[in-house]
Image (spheres, one colour):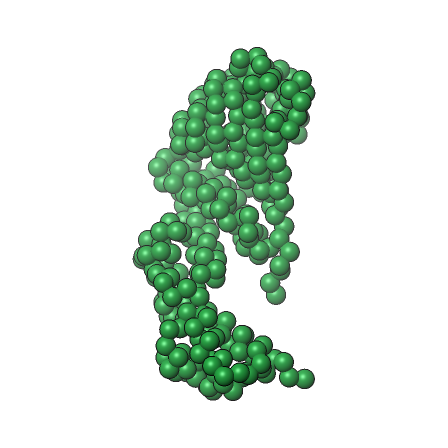
Amino acid sequence: MMSNASPVQSQKFDVADIEPRYRIEAMRTFLPFKVTQFELVGNDPHAFKAQTEMLMVNGLSVGHHVSSGFRASTHKPGTDGSRFLYVIKYVKGTRRYSYDGSSYETVTDKINIADIGRWTGMTCDGPIHSVFALVPYELVGFEEGQQNDRFGHPLDAVTHEVLDANLELLGNQLPTASADEANLLQTVFTGVVRSVLRYPRKLDEFSHDMLQTGREVAVRRYISQNFARRDLTVEEVCFVCGISRSTLYRIFRDEGGFANYVTAQRLSAAFRQLTRTTARRGLVRYVADNWGFSNQSHFARLFRKAYGFPASDIIGSALED
């Protein structure tokens, strides 16, 4: 049974909503680790800008952040309950992190993975824009203090591509996801992160499977929102969902292919509408046209083949006592 109540929650933080004299303290409180020192680049709270929007599902948080420059540090890493891994990409600007007695600087448009529990500080000297996911240790089987050579180092091209694609998928799909879709998207992403951490030299087959599952969710959702359009094409679905034609065909291979799948969705929608509508002249033609069939005769043949009786036989049947 499908669940309709979405587990996705949202949170927004914007210092523009806060009086300038309280902005520094508000930012200290909002950061995902305990801050003992915080200072602004330029030292002017009136000019300081910071905004974060997040979506949260089953402990996983995904969102984007923009801010002007600041420096933050802590003297007691790992003692404040910051049991999160940080998967982040800077779309604009970079940050320098202090971590395990050393420091590293992020690269624009490249995914980074870090253990927030061991940060000792962060610095961004100018404006930044980042997209990120906060992943609780327990969702990926990570233990506090565990070492991993993915932290603070560039990722190989394949790993970067998979994490980047899944991070984008989360941001695009979660806002309108059903409960089942949101849970699946969360499982996909945390499964990929878990696999990346366990196999530091290459992305294993499980991660590729998880990526394919996430893409399939996006493809099926896009089709469900657009199948009534006569101009829906393979090229459009591939472009919007970021997949190849071969991947699209593979998704619907067991359902007779893309065209058959779309036709089945249209027929099912037409069936439901006919059963819930009072009989009137031209109704079958109207319903066929409404769900993307330009030819009534073609619709009639497909309907009889799919259900074993003519479309006119079920008109209003759901309205009967």
